[in-house]
Image 1 (cartoon, rainbow, N blue to C red):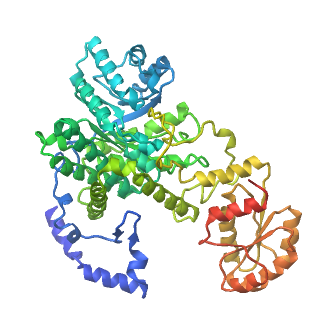
Image 2 (cartoon, rainbow, N blue to C red):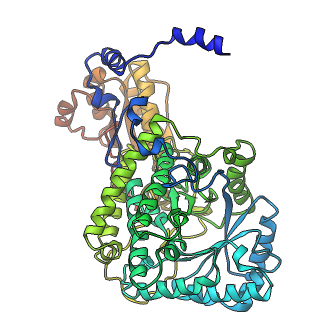
Image 3 (cartoon, rainbow, N blue to C red):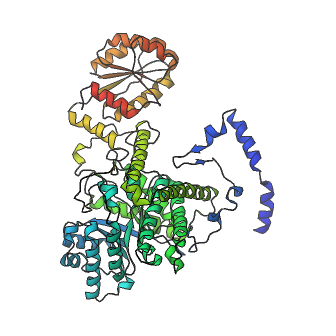
Length: 621
């Protein structure tokens, strides 16, 4: 093998970066490198098209080892993670039966979600009947006002069952900042409430009782660096205030669980978790904990809800699969994959089974659990990790300078920043700069969805945090990226009308086919019926066929050069009997507008606003 390598490598001598840049510059033929090949991310830093060993020289990310401070490469020596499935608890006996069934299907972590009024000893006993708390991670989510009571009930239950609480793992998701973030009301008593939960949690040594629900920020549309930066400030706020209240830093940090969402930004999400562990370790270390293990971040990941869609919902499977892969490769402690139908109905057995198997396949067939931090050493991932850590740290420091996370949330600043990001991302969806397959690009033309929607999509806004006050500050907006497109298409369905869009294809074969395909996808996003054609000899023949078909919209599809003649002729022949649209942005656009032709669709169009305009003209509200 050594001889073979010695013979092989001389054939591939090292090429200096300068030579690569010269070659790239030549191939670009004068086009600017920065404009054509450098990715200007939404995270506040640019990403180059290639990286080399010299780019990671001196980076701390490249020299850390798994299981060692600052835990960039993981908090343990393996990459095993827990497979979690959540259960909405309305009937405790039924939830128990479902939980027992799931434990035989590969689930190693259960998430029980129920309302605070149901936190009673007999209900918890019924829920956990036949479940061994020492062998499966148990996670509970209830309203904040009942979290302390739930912890005490769990502790007593374990004692009665003769179970060693020190061998039981789980969490009780007390979120001290749920009120301002989700409900838009103040939580000035949060320190006392959190201290009470922390004190009660001593009875469950290996339970994480304090939650940093950064997933809510992500599901409300935050960029990745914002989710990370705010999560760090959130966690630091808890540690700072509770150490001031007399608790040890080890004790507080050891009770915090970070809950993150995972977006479809594949490599950036891998970098996020690596950066998160690193920065959190540095933050906790600043409190001089007695034991180094206090600096370890325990992170749960769940697939994104922001990019889930009602239309073409099976595409959600593709999104959640890459998201689960990012989390698994990044070395999180547990993962929840939401069923593809989560946002519009109660998931059925099929969708829940697929969701479980998505991450079980990553373990059992892809063996992702066998390799610790497989992305380590990748020049790209290492640079992303360092870059993301840098911008997230800057945001963290900004929040600290303004008085900490609660002060920022109390002022509504966190909510406004995230909601602004969400609006920007939804505008990107509206203009197709961010693609949601099946919703704003390549929709299923024949699909209808109104009848399959069985529950209201409210994001995290339905959770009961015991806040009876009126909203006084901004709350997070949990509108998904597809929400506005779905409202548009549902309006078409519910109107009882199905507007027909006729493609008047004429002239240059390649251009008319390309533009008819573009236009068909464009109008199908609103649920219109598209009538495509192979081509017409004259515009008059096309207009006659369009009117015969009952078209409400006629879209002229041809080449830019031919529009100067075809467009005025078609517009005149149509004579206002239907809406007239030109597909493209021809050089003669101003001349056409002067003749009364004002409607154009092209790659720069705001698809959502344009289709809303057509809905209004067609009487669809």
